[in-house]
Length: 189
Ligand code: 5GP
Image 1 (tube, rainbow, N blue to C red):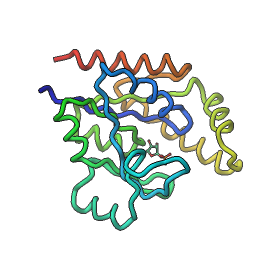
Image 2 (cartoon, protein in one colour):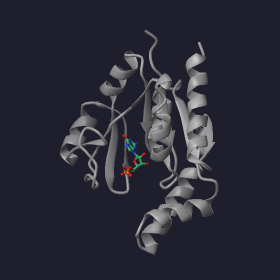
Image 3 (tube, rainbow, N blue to C red):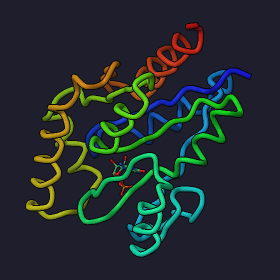
Image 4 (cartoon, rainbow, N blue to C red):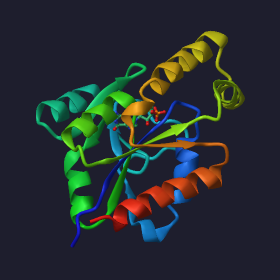
């Protein structure tokens, strides 16, 4: 069986990564599986352990890092996040194309370890639009909001490190573009 692809998807907070993912994941012909990360962040309302994340203690996370269990790991706004390597490997060996929806520091580690991975960066139509989306979805104070925007600007400066760029003007259109990129890559070789 042909080994599945490793697909890294990043984009600033508020760009709509998970909303777009929900659409392209529905296309069975793409043979996609979502890599469930390990995190020390507390579950948000509606999140389930083993579905959205593996929620762990800082101690368990440190052990995972020490034992080399993680393909990559990074700190993001005070919490740790990492990709369990064996889970990804098992899925790929079963022919599944695996989606890692991760932030930039982790993505750069994956690109270095697996140079043949497929990397996709989702961009907002503009910074103004991103600000409007973050404002629309949060009830956060101005300082937190400015912090998120500052982080988004920093993240956007890494866009050139990714093989493909998709602008999220429209959810369905962005999902279709990502689907087409994956299909083209599956047909290579
Ligand atoms: P959130 O706390 O909003 O679920 O995620 C915060 C950020 O961490 C998002 O950009 C998300 O894509 C990223 N993230 C989720 N899982 C992982 C992971 O396993 N590794 C890395 N490096 N980032 C992750």
